[in-house]
Length: 400
Image (tube, rainbow, N blue to C red):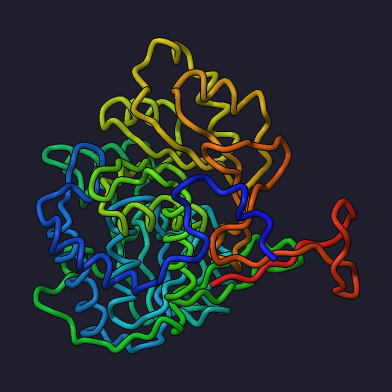
């Protein structure tokens, strides 16, 4: 029935781990590891206890602004503490997060705000002009603006806006509630959440027309992050350092970097842009142990000038997704770091990972690997009938 079980690495379970609400898991980690660094961001460190206080403050701000359970909260931010706080805060308030690509054109933003019915929008100050182009057609009731400077240490927090103004990247008109003013102290009203409640609208790439919002539940998101964790048999709770370079507004980055890290009480090193220089520096400085990425990132890493002389041996495991991973890229990366780099597969509707090559067992070039624990998979013909091994067909999957 499950022939792939025989090829699992030792220590990988055959069943999917039992999911729990992401917000409950983060609250528990704030209680168990209050002083441990949860987020490292451009010279600033935020502990698990401090992160949870910010999540509660954002949730309370949403509730005081009129957000009710089920209301959509769009998040148009790069990887940053604000992204993490807004995402978990939206869930804690009973809202539904709507991941919004900061690279969206006004036309794409208009479609997503309209289609999702977003009541609130959290936006980077530099991106305000794009919303201002469409706000007459798709106004949100609550607009919260924030900037990279809101979490930079002194004096960078004062210098950063001046730098943007000098570059001509500062908006002519600022609007919306400033981030710090929106966060409200105190505990938000408890909202009873069910694992099968909608948690996230994750918009697909629109390969068949306009982008469509995949409806992902609390169960979907939690289960998939825990499946990724179970695939790394030597995962060390409270000790890992995860590189958050791939964008969280894509479900791959959200699950394999952000949610994996915060459910496992790891330190999450946040980079607003996936640029290879800062990535190499972050790996050295923070002794990154888990480096999820995409093939283009590993190619750039391999070709970075002087990479052979850098101290990169802290990296232990990497899962590559979004595109096929060439064998020569994987082999050079593993020679440089000593890490295991394997290719996985998934789709937005699955939160997203469904298959992955074993980290320690045989890796097959050009293969998506084995189904994750708890994933059913088979290859069928156009009528949905299972085809024999070796025959071409369509892959269908089902998971938690």
